[in-house]
Image 1: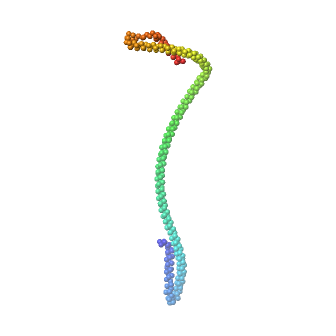
Image 2: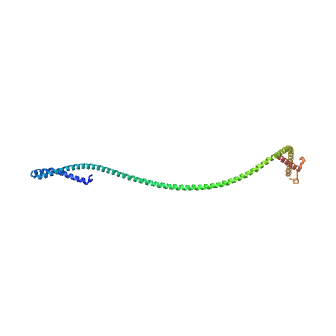
Image 3: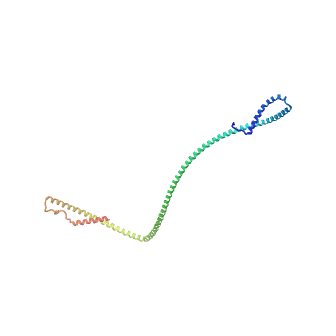
Length: 297
């Protein structure tokens, strides 16, 4: 508080108090010096001196009063200085706190700035990502719209085909109904003609039974004839075989003897029975007919 400057009035009071203190210190010396001179002075001078002393005493009382006020003011000034010092200390403390707060605010603002920059970068990346997603969404939406349009066209085509198929089905149903009516009429006609057909079937069954009975009798008779013909054919076949064997033996004998005159002539065996070629042919024809008849039966 050395640099703290007081108001001009207080400084004047302090100066006057200092002067009064100096006068008080100098006053006893002046009185001591003037005591021997009182005896030689005149009464007028003594009265003047008394008046002067009265004035000095009044001035002294006034000085005492002023000194008391100055002391009181000095005490108040000390208190004011103490209060001012406390306020200055508080001010300095508050200034330090404000400086710390300012630094903290600056650091916080810098931190907030960095966070804002990071958030802005993140926001830009998110915006770019959202733009990409928006474009992708628009492309997907376009594809979906194209698919939907194609599906709608296909649905319309299928509806047209379904309507055409329904019309064809109705035509088929109508034709089938007509055919059903025709078949019902035919069935009724057949039901009406059924007794006639049953009568014909009964007649045919009777005729077939009769023919089967006659066929069985003919079959037994044919089997008997066939057996006889087979026996006859076997005998004829054996006779023909023996005759051909005799002819072959005779031909071999003639070839070995070297007789050229008898070449080509058949040998005559008086012991073999005479068999004609026409009879053999007739027997073969009868045998073939009998076999065909047996196969038919």
